[in-house]
Image (cartoon, rainbow, N blue to C red):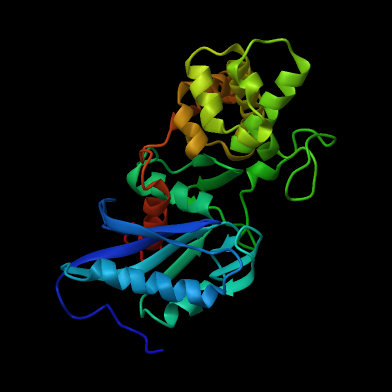
Length: 328
């Protein structure tokens, strides 16, 4: 298929395409240098579908977004689980059913623009640095609280990728070696306690092990969601509140370890579960302060995302490619 060069000599506004690839769908949008998402959409990822077909559809959707706009596409940024910034690949992604995909090569079949790829949490961190709560900061940690727990680390103004491109997996540090089974195959990973699924697991344990009154006792585990727990906690449900307290206690404990390693100015919580606001922020702050090495006490902020609840992942992916283009 012929590659389309969307970088012409025209003088239109430069935009990038930010893409967040999830297990069931990919969200995307045109993002300008100021962090405005000008237009967007989504397409199904179709787990198990050949990646070449997915990327062909994605590039076609990008061209449709550009139709009729006085905009020039400067690049494509992609955030996805198990994505590697160094190699431009997605590797062993169980939620997509892709063993190994050279993302830059796939996009290059259709669009002649620079492409940058990283995991979704790293993209979120760059989004916060360029457009959100971390503007002006050089040292901070972003924690994404979704189905799992992701993390992006910025030190001295640069994203930390490590030797192989996969650094920053705070969600897979161990809380309890004999604890909950994690999808990674180990036991006691932080994300099994501090994530949307971890919160629901805590609710089920509290239902079994306590006599706390709760509207959630009538919910089966299959029907239980972090949103339901958050809504119940907002209504003062004792068991739901206890679940958030437990989650925040554990998250603050492990973040204190991360602070000892990295000395960040702030920890920023984002993702679906972070929308619970003070329900998760308050116990996390309290636990972090309690467990911090004394020289750090009173110095590390715990903040909500500055990107809002919509287009966060797309803005992060857009920030990734702006940063890679040297225009951050």
